[in-house]
Length: 135
Image: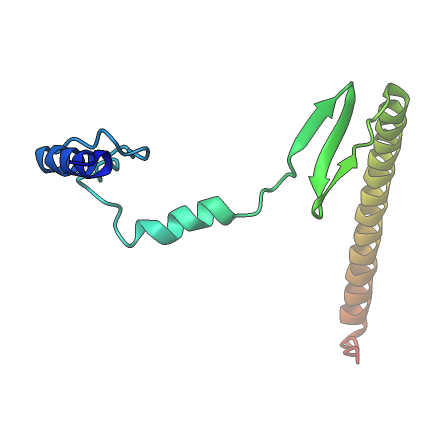
């Protein structure tokens, strides 16, 4: 019996026994499937979670510098210095003070308009005439 034929016979016998000794490729069995596969209703939600756009771009710090992934590219992030933060806080306080002043002015003007309208109505009722409707 030639060598290659004897090897083939041995391989066939081992294969029938469930042993694949001579095979250089011996894959592992596939993992067993879960007993409760996800329902069809869960799939769109899971896909939405996987493909949703993040509210904030991913960030990375290398060598003390910050980078963020925006529009498909890594861009260096501009770090705010303490002086910038202080300047923004001063501007914020100034704008809040201006906002309070403007609200007070609006309140005073509304009070003045109410007083003028009340005076006009009392004057017209005393004279016996009705105020003209506005157009």
